[in-house]
Image (cartoon, rainbow, N blue to C red):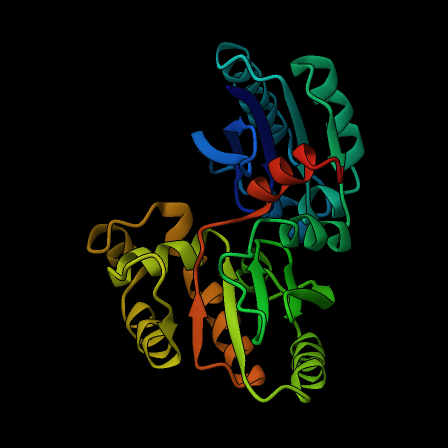
Length: 296
């Protein structure tokens, strides 16, 4: 006997907003299967408002309301049984973030919870990683967003420690990450990884997914530090327009992919990692799994 449940997750990030709809297949005596049914991404760069001006603009509030109304209708036609909507650093830092969330609740009837970096890291880490995590190895999980980056250290398949830093792609584009923050990240990564002989990175986020796709590698294969370094140089050698026309990148991906690559490269350098695995997971996947297993 098979039963199928439909869950959805809305991730309101600093660079884009996503709606993920998942079919959860339940079969007696077997682990539940999480099959992606639909993923819609809307490039509303809230971080540009929140980090530079401190508030979300009227134009972006209107766009958010429209997007959320559309998400609500999509969930309705997909017959979604349960959903959660989480907003991260842009909504967290905009002084009108709560006001915007209230307006969306009123206009689009979607309840948004604004979460802190620690909860964000915990939700992402609750994503099913056991097929990747070899028990005798140590992994640094790095999720790069527009406003912040979440780091989680795993050893023996268990979380050792995690931390969120205000170093995201939209902040870096606006030159809003000072040397002190980079120094903090370097010191923290070196301190938490010093006792481990070998560390491997796991990368999460739209930019590393794009870098992986561009590599043409098989899903289970990692990217090397050498590959990441050469890609960083290559991307930097192209203009913004060339990254769109020659590489086929979306306009809202063509600029943030460079600072994102820099974050992953630094994390590899400071942890001594030579490889990075890219399992194509993120906050929205974590939300669905955390909901299903009753963690949120």
